[in-house]
Image 1 (spheres, one colour):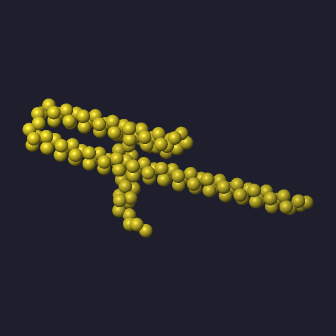
Image 2 (tube, rainbow, N blue to C red):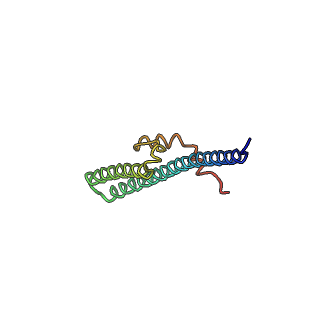
Image 3 (cartoon, one colour):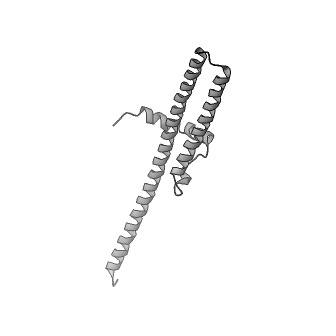
Length: 136
């Protein structure tokens, strides 16, 4: 073998390229996992906010009934609440999807509120771990 240093250089380049490839694959896998975790947490927070919004609606309707408001006004409040809730759901899901951009768009497993709730239900264990895991 006339040029053993060439073998060493090629071996080093191959090892370096392999290391970079595995680092990239590992980083990509972790990035996608972080994105999925943030999706789950954000959907959970949105559902909790909607739950509180619903309680506020029920409280407002009860106050309106106690104050003698007409059924028409109470129904108008209920309709407006429904429209605002649907608008909020659509906007929240679209914002989550848009935030991922083109490269990570495949990491989003939902396209609307219904599929987002299926995604959240499928990741119930992740939510429970997030809520109950002790700080380290």
